[in-house]
Every structure is written in structure tokens, then in C-alpha cells.
Length: 396
Image 1 (spheres, one colour):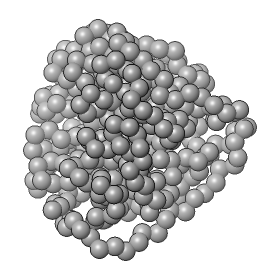
Image 2 (cartoon, one colour):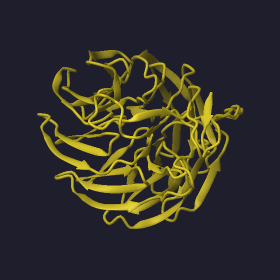
Image 3 (cartoon, one colour):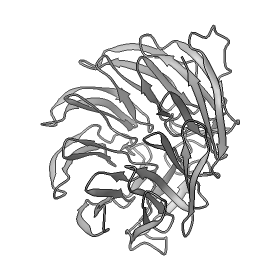
Image 4 (cartoon, helix red, strand yellow):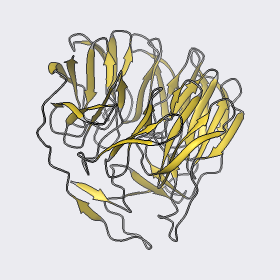
């Protein structure tokens, strides 16, 4: 079942008013959108997922292996690839390393408390964050390396570089810790918005800079050496009468390729900017929270209704539009060669052509949502479901 709010449905929550949670210096009152009724918006509506249509597969997808790593429940977890292995997390505090070829467990660690964000890893350091804002850094064998506590809840996977662990919180802060010692190197802070999406706020790296989207429709480039802002641009501006209508957040991971960064905003726009200067290349009306992916030919994203579209990378011209997954709550996409791969709210995995958006193949998991981006480990495609299973597929 999916829930509709101002043209958007998701498992995301809405965060209002900095005041409540006891472990934060400035906490949040959390209201899930599927129980939310606020002035200025219509009552919550239910939208039925589109039925899946038969088609002739053009890509052969075969199950390879599956393994349970523990349920994710509300947080959206996806595995991270480290060499020929994967690291996955569960909401109950389990962190597991798995052989990508056969799905066998290499090690498993139990951290203190439930996990809200993660994992992130460079193969040497793996990072997860619990629901109390405690950051756990594990070594290559799953043993504790260091622990730190941040100011607020964390829903976004950290970024791990050769020098830093980058963690961002829902109260508008980005922390940089030394990857080896956990010592705080810098803190980027901005005024927290009074109303934001309670969802993962993605980050990406370009050269020695961090690319991040923010509530209020902002996109920024931040230097990794000192946390100083290089540039900030407005991807989208608030509009409407009610607070809900004016809610504009840049969520999902910004897509970086060549000279450009492209990103989408909830109730806002999809646009591309020059990485060096922040100058806009193009933008178009769009609303989504799962982010976008891109290559030299196109930028690909799904909107709040799960309509998937491709746009010309250079000028933003609409290349194609696929509405066959309408209201199916499609997740974060993976772009592999000329194929776009994304899961949906009923555990199906869809393979679309980036050339025309047509369906190439479909795979099935356990019937629970596949919300995080699929990953490739070697020649195996891997997805993680809300019920806590990893599924490996081979596809040709």
C-alpha cells in the first residue's frame, strides 16, 4: 500500500519543529506522512500500484544466491561493494560482510543499538550510525576502530575517503572525522529548516570536494580539506500557500559525471550544473526524492509517481518517459552500461533501456520493497529488500 501527499508518495517521513528527541541537542518531532493530516493539504490518499504488464525480455536475468542479513524495516539500507565482497546492515544492529560470488558470510558484527544509516566503506573502514547518533567505525575484520556521537539523527550513509569519514545529520550539519582516529577535522553547519523531508540526504565526491543537496532546494560544493563552501546554487525555490506546499528538499545522491552534477528536488526541479563554478546548464520542473543517475547521453530519474524519465545531459530535453511503473514506489536507480535498474515496493527489480525507456527484463525477490540502489559486485547484481534479504542475480 502506498500513500499520496501532494503528488508524492514514499516511505519517507516529514520532520517538523526542532524540539523533541532526548538524545539531540536540538531534536525533531517526527511525523510520518502516512498518518499526517495538516492544514493546507488534502487528506492522505491511497494510490494503487500499476499492474505489471507482460513483455518479451531482451535481457536474461537468473537468480544466483540469496542470504538474510536482518530486516531494515523503516530505514532504507543497501549493500556497499568492497572489492569482490559486499557489506550490508540491518536495523537491529548487525553488520555483515558477504562474498559477492556465492553469498557466503565472511564476518558479522553486532553494534550497540539499532542502526539508522549505513553502511559505507572503502574496504578498510566501514561506518554505520545508530538511532542515537553514534557513529561506529569498524576495521577490515569488523572490529571496532573508533566511535563518535553527532548532534542529531542520521539517515544518510556516510562517505568514506582515504582521509575522512563524512557524516551528515538531519539538523543541517556535516561532520568530517579522521578516518583512522575519529578526530573531528571540521564541521559544516547551516540553519536547519523548520520543515524537511525525513529521508536520506545524499552526498557525492568530485575531486577534493563534497557535493551535497540541502532543504530549501539548495545544492552546494564543499571543500574536503576544510569544510568551506566553494559555491551554492538554488536548484528549486519554494512556492505555494501552506508549509507542505512550500517544502522543497534536494534529496537522494547528486549524480556526478564529467563536468556536471545533476540533482532533483522534491516539489522542485531537476537540473544540471557545472561542477567547477555552479553555473546552471539546464533545469526543468520535477519532483522526486530518489536522486538521479547520468551518463554522457542522459540523466535518468523517477518522480513522485514512479514515472521514469530520461533527459538529454547537455540541454535537458526530454528523451523518453515510462509510466508503466506508476505508483509502484520505485527505488534508487543503478546505471550499468545502457541499462537502468531499480527495485519497487513489491520486491520486483526492473531493467529499463536508457535509449528509449522500454522494459528489458524483470526479476523478483521476496515481495518486500527494494528501495536502495542495486549494486554490481563483479558480474553479479545485488539488491537488498526491506525484509532483510540480499539477492544476487546474473544478467546478460
